[in-house]
Image (tube, rainbow, N blue to C red):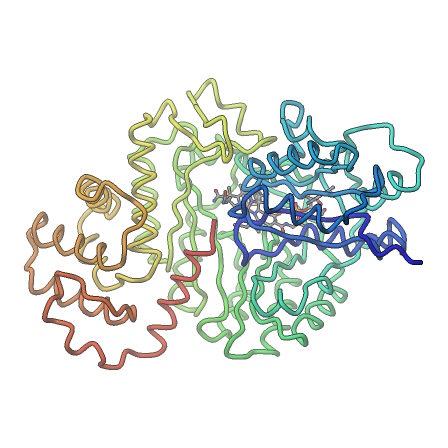
Length: 525
Ligand code: B12
Ligand code: SF4
């Protein structure tokens, strides 16, 4: 009789349900090619979220493996990332206690560097560092059919991309209906920004374009309309970027939504012309700026032409319908609060749709560590290894900034207070103005989470009219407009008696944009 109990489970704990693991789907898609048809038939994919209790995950995995364990001949491979390493360590510990002979194999960026001191690596049987597409199937074959692997830690084979099967058929109908679909036209990055894991890549490698487009066509035919490209730099090879964009231009639908990460200083005219052809609501660009300080850029080996960056953002804002998410990082070596503020103000003046404020993290393996002593960098010892203080910013200011970033998400990136914000941020330094509000909100609410849109609205009203001294009637009117546009339906105290007209229709386009922004804030890390 055919044994239908899985021999291999591919598993990971995603940040949220909406994120589907692309890495594991690559491993699954390559089981037959690099491990054998028999292995593929006995491999299943089981994803969880980090919110799920350890005991439930362990029980689900063990149930999958059956009541009569095939001792020593069953494998669970875990994808380990910065967001799940703590929880996955407990899952692995529990599994090893209950089934000591179950083989645990680890892989993923969080265990690919500086693994020697990691508890999860100590608990596991094997670790494959780097790419797993070819090495995982090979290791499974060796574990199940011999010869037994000699090494615990295996350096993942970086095969040519033509030797790697594309994973997109592994997205299920339910993935297509309910989750963000990650796709990858290229791997790696030629740049060397020291805070980033991709700085370790030698270059960027592109998947064969025709094959990739055929895979996209397959996904599209199955109904995929919400795709997130994980390419580190989508606009590296302009010919490929153009082909991919043209592919979607030929297949525009009202629900199409595409996310790309782009470098800001490389937007040749032919790419601009293509971008300009997309209607609103389709393109979203994540544009890493990180810092505008040439000195800090040089210190962290980030090559960026600031003048071109600004000109391109300005062009995108005014001549395209792309939704722009721009990123800044706080706490880079040697950057003071005032320097960050200047960068923020420069970026804010360009009016991108969102400014994402990140706090520096020291990712395992990144070259950033070389600055630790000279620049007084102190990072948290636990994931995600966030900066706690630097020689240029003390611990209190890091905390202060962290609160500001949270309030910025709630008030600005949420898109809920579009009319009110310019009122608040008017003046010589928008950053200074927002910092003052942030300090006030913290003093008066004592929290950065659990604040409802109504709490925020009442807070803004009290601050703008009571603290800044703006005319309360004008403040109320802009808050009212924002509140109605957002579609919220409760009763903030400061709008008491003003919401009678709440059923007046709001432009569908306005509301859709606000909701899309709100959705982004809730799915991003
Ligand atoms: C999608 C994504 C997310 C999603 C999460 C997705 C999910 N599944 O839940 C979101 C948006 C939530 C996210 C958030 C963050 N992310 Co992120 N994210 C990515 C991104 C863009 C794509 C991942 C991907 O699919 N890659 C493509 C696949 C093919 O590669 P892969 O996953 O590495 O898989 C390969 C190998 O690792 C290996 N492998 C994977 N699993 C397994 C399992 C086994 C058994 C084996 C043997 C091998 C193996 O084989 C695969 C194929 O070769 C990467 C950048 C990138 N392009 O990789 C960053 C990245 C993973 N993120 C990173 C970081 C730092 C973060 C944040 C901390 C950023 C922040 N906000 O400051 C947050 C953390 C959030 C939190 N809650 O703590 C770092 C990872 C560092 C780390 N050590 O894990 C990356 C690499 C970016 C970078 N360049 O620095 N992220
Ligand atoms: S930050 Fe972006 S450009 Fe810099 S190394 Fe990482 S992926 Fe490449």
